[in-house]
Image (cartoon, rainbow, N blue to C red; front, top):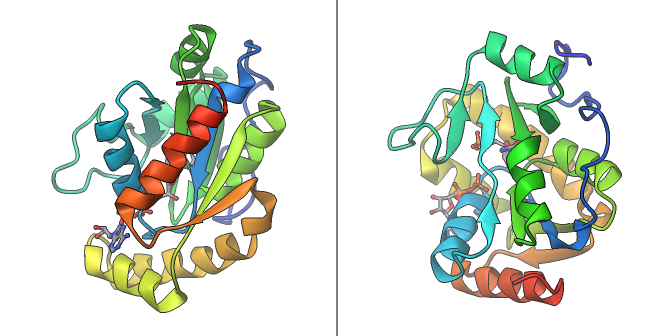
Amino acid sequence: MPISEPSDRREPSPGDGTLATPAHSRLTVLSGPSGVGKSTVVAELSKTCPQIWISVSVTTRKPRPGEVDGREYHFVDDAEFDRLVASGALLEWARFAGHRYGTPRAPLANKLEAGVACLLEIDLVGARQVKRAVPGARLVFLAPPSWDELVRRLSGRATESPEILARRLAVAREELAAADEFDITLVNTSVQDVSRQLITLIEQCGSV
Ligand code: ADP
Ligand code: 5GP
């Protein structure tokens, strides 16, 4: 498993392949450019439909103000992330704007095994890995109403330095160009509307 790539966008390979569960259609993956509103939509969905299980990713990024370890992310250092990759504990992982992010395999497998509808909020590189590793997973792309609105949302969030903001916007252009790799695109004009659409989609998977 390569764990130190020079580029943000070089694609890692997933742990050791597939999830040991047949419940693939219960898995939904939400991706989209940084700042489009993924976390906001997922928080809304979680409020209205708490029976959908949201995976908590592992990251080497530092917590933002208000983020709590184990809630938004499991915050780990590089050595711990290396250990997780080496032991196959991550279903997928990717580098994003200077940090690594990954989906813990075991909690997700347990939930799918138990018949629970599951949602991953991950980047494009991770979504591609899940598509290969979990046939039947539904891939949803969250798009901004316009490029200018995406820039407004990302800079308005005021969580990144100008340098990191520029990096995230450069990656966003690549992510937007890959929207047709997804099963469906939802445009985040209204958080409530998109959250409802997402819940309906997941219900259509026969899973809620
Ligand atoms: P992501 O998780 O995709 O990086 P966030 O959920 O952090 O994005 O949202 C980025 C910013 O955009 C936040 O300030 C959020 O409040 C705002 N936002 C999210 N959805 C909408 C929307 N539909 N309309 C206006 N602002 C939004
Ligand atoms: P942020 O730093 O803004 O929380 O997240 C940056 C990017 O990492 C977002 O596109 C988010 O969807 C993605 N991300 C979060 N968790 C994971 C994960 O477990 N795996 C992958 N591949 N990407 C993730």
